[in-house]
Amino acid sequence: MKQRWRHLIASALVLALCLSAAACGKSDDTAGDDWRASGAVVDSGTITHDGDSVDVLVTVSESSAAFYRDMTEQVLFDSVSFPVSIPDAEEAFHAISFDDIDGDGESDVLVRFLHKSGDTTEMIWIWDPVERYVFREDLSTVAVGDGVLSSQPYFTKNGLQINAAVEMGTFLLEDGVCSYSGLGDGYNTDDCYWEIVKNGDYTHDGIRELHFDAICYIPEGAIPYFDQQYITVTSSELYDYYTGTWLTASTAYGNSQRGENYYLYTISWQGSSYLIEFAYSTEWEYNVSDWAQVLTKSYVVYIPEDYNGLIFAAEAQPLTYKESAKRMQLDSICPEAAILDIDTLAPYSCLFFDLCD
Image 1 (cartoon, one colour):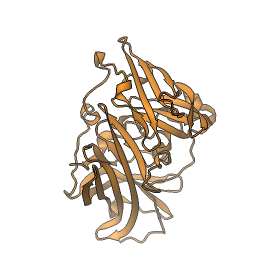
Image 2: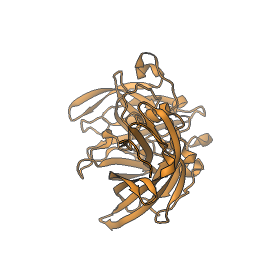
Image 3: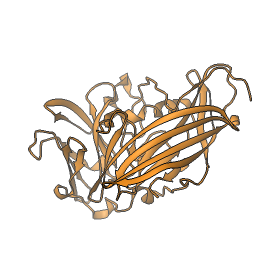
């Protein structure tokens, strides 16, 4: 085993880089480091909850509308996830309203699209203090003409295959780990292996409770020699199979009543809403058997017993340090983005595990 200088392992690198993203789309740096100049903003408004009002700027993608604080730095305030994909969302966007629709004194959300076909899509979410914005199919009108919307699950429609299996050993992820020193010196990507081991699967009171470990094995040869402190990075996330929504561990979604470090999402699909809550912890081990490093992410997830769309993705690393650094910001810039809209991510290079199978 090679002798190495003391090293720092990190599953997430926090960098203060002012890199803009257009609703988590592909965009370049903007002049003056003010993300509002990127052209991503489609509307603005004021959201009121518990008597407090916040001015927000709105961006849209085919899977969601995101609401950011009106400030130079791109800071997410909240968002809504569309019940179905809207491929022409940016072109067809017409208006958004945060008026109180149900008279409870809280801001609700209405998003309207005018499609080239002449059809109108109008979607409404009503505020709930526990589940946040809940999509109301009974109040919404969704256009189906000219294939604007699809009833196919997002993963199926976009050819994203479940290519790994729970409790079936390790699976190779090409370029699944990167390492470097300083601010990107010696940046290198190499292969690693992932497996998922279930520790518990219980159903009670209509809720399915999953406990599992996602384990990443990094071979000795995957990390080049560094003569100074260095960083190793792997990436993995949860997604929804039906909408492609990224279930990121963003502080904007840390409002679960189960306690601190739990994250809460509401997935809307074909008129039904599914509340997903999860928490996880990480542990790094070094020089384990034939592996240089082993990362274990231990999850606990609560989902409705009739929901079966939870996906774990082990993600390949970007080709450059700049892209790697940019990826570290995306959980606060574009949570709930659809997987194909996430900048720096190569979805067709991921390993996908079906956690509900």
